[in-house]
Image (cartoon, rainbow, N blue to C red; front, side, top):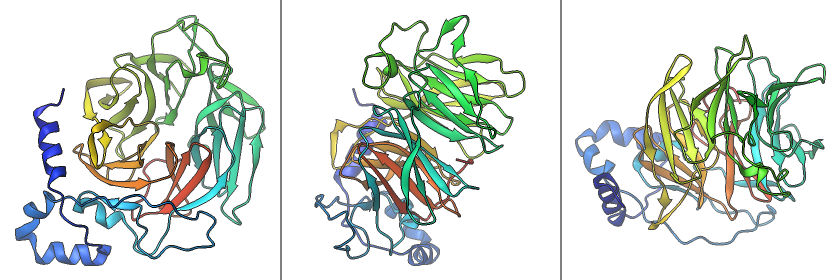
Amino acid sequence: MHTERDRALLSRRARRAPRTPLTRRAFLGATVASTAIAPVLAAQQTDIPPYEPRDWSGRSPLPYPDPDIIALDPRFRPYILFNTPIRRHYTGTLWAEGPAWNGSGRYLVWSDIPNNRQMRWLEEDGHVSVFRQPSGHSNGNTFDHAGRQLSCEHGGRRVARYEHSGAVTVVADRYDGRRLNSPNDVVVHPDGSIWFTDPPYGIRGNYEGRPAEAELPLSVYRVDGSTGAIARVTDEIGAPNGLCFSPDYRRLYVADTGSGRNVKVWDVDGERLVNGREFVRLSVPGNPEALSVADGMRCDVDGNVWAGATPGVQIVAPDGDVIGIIRLPERCANVCFGGTRRNRLFMTASQSLYSVYVGAQGAGIA
């Protein structure tokens, strides 16, 4: 059932104005010169042109701007770079997940869950190779503030840390004496703590893990960086999936791919989560009656949430309005910001890895 806010949002989308490409400079200039009409512009949204199949080999370049980077709200226009395309770097995975950027190594690591391997893309020359196999059917990955890789492993039902020496440390595999279900995605906090989600997807069969019975409620956990103590911070969510902090670490966003089918947000109160509430319930832009569900997510430095969700990536402003989309030909499971200036959005989508430069920079470190 739609709330009054939902109905208002759908009504605004039904009155979308035609798309007028603007550069960031032109947009900012128009904003300064025309502040009187800002309320009117804020209410306008653009029509979504039909998706056209494209040649991802790069042999048939597209004219700029890329037609699959679309502003639904003027607030997204500063993040669209006029002269950059979405690129496909690799195809050949079965289910691509968990992209994480290593700044010192200038590479991206991501998971191919069913093939029980991790892949690596090198920024220097675009080379792609198998990084780690077996990988414990890893899903989400990140790097901590010491540059060590953290991986959520379905196969071992654990969160593992790869030390600089090559040793593997088990960060978490049990809570209250019972085994975790199948850790899914992981983020780190500047205080050294590690936060992760624990839905059931890796224990539902042999394709992405091993079949087993759930021993714990589906929850979000925090691991203390000093003591290693694990605490459940919430189980008030259907099936917690992707998660990310706001740029100031005062809020934690968690995607619910279970009964909630939404993104929730909590205030971070030290080691606790408080004031849980719905942040956004996504639909498919252009078809508001069709629900879309967020998977992996990252915040940019302005507080926008970039979420893997049909028809590719949906970008949600801090107030919960969907302001833009990046269309892909495959279902996007997860995203991260990378590159030397953290202004390149990497997208793991089903069988492929994509990226695009944007006018935003990623918050956090990986």
